[in-house]
Length: 433
RNA sequence: GGGGGAGUACCAGAGCGGUCAAAUGGGGCAGACUGUAAAUCUGUUGGCGCAGCCUUCGGAGGUUCGAAUCCUUCCUCCCCCA
Figure 1 (cartoon, rainbow, N blue to C red):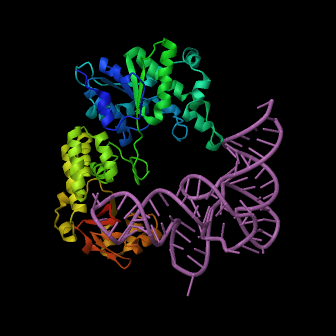
Figure 2: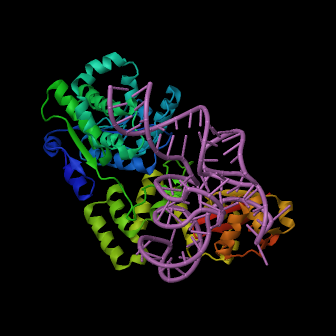
Figure 3: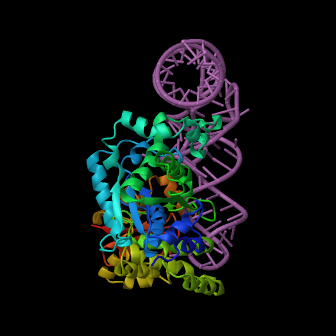
């Protein structure tokens, strides 16, 4: 009943490294595997989605996924990233975050069936919190040499003089703590595989090593990593000017979420569609081919954006996002804007940042710079607003304006709204009240 | 404990008495070109009442007509030896 999980990931370009024997193990029997997520926030962002998709494919292949919430490890901070040392999350926040994450994951993985391979969620805080330091160094630390730990890239990098930052003992222990998670799950959940991003390879193999040394089980714990998701231009994946792209609609509106995927470059979209959608190989190849025929249609991006938006949000949210995109980026003209009725207008601009002006001020006819800075705070300084105006980067109700513009009642849409556009893609809906 | 080195704008990193609001690169933003791509090119990237002024070069003092640059002291970090 298992389909070939490894094969599936392979054509999707989701395998960076995998320990020998993993494929055989997965073909042999239903296997339990886990991915770790740090509960640093009460929502997942799209960076997490990669790990989730690995679990999704795993489950679809008939195996059992476990999501490990890193309540304990999250407090330490992985030295692989350049992140600063983390602060301890208090237990209440931790639980809150965990619940929020679970709610989101429930849409993506199947936690609720009676099937033996239903997804599970665990938190390593539960087994780490009462683990005393002495017990830990005796039962776990004994089995791994410092030499072994030092040979990891994540550690070596931080130890080299060029790094210029050093590493605390706490961070150094990170791989051991994470390694112990694997051991724990191996013993209590019969979990034989840990997956993660390629930066996790060192940490994961510390786990497999620990299992071997402590239990003497040869060739029975496995590791699989996927390539770090990058953008073709070398930028960080999943970040925009405004920060992370979250799954929580309160943090990133479905419109913005949809737009993120729609804006991917061709090269990235071709890569992402394999990773983030469940479309079959044939379907994807067909779309890629069609896209190559008529690249300006951007079928690739549209399909990608649609698929992910539906799964993370909903069909309705997708519709909304598509409509809004159409109006904002289609042949939207000033006339079209004026024709929108209030409810359409509001739903279209759901998720677009808002600002306010007072009606009285508006009646006086405001200088555009005053309007942008003092009243609506769309710009933090007048200098910047002027610069942008000079650069021809500001539109009011889809019409380019310059410094001589005055904003007044005549600019109101539906007697209440003004649409300000900064550059091509940044919209602000200003409410007069 | 001893010795050495470093802290500069979003980041990296020059400057080491005036000509420094601070080179250069990256990033960001905008414009042109396009497909709401990519690549490329151009502009811009402390604030203001903007040919002038004000606040910035780890913190606090001091020397000087004048300091990011010199001195004192404090803080933080790194390296080497023990």
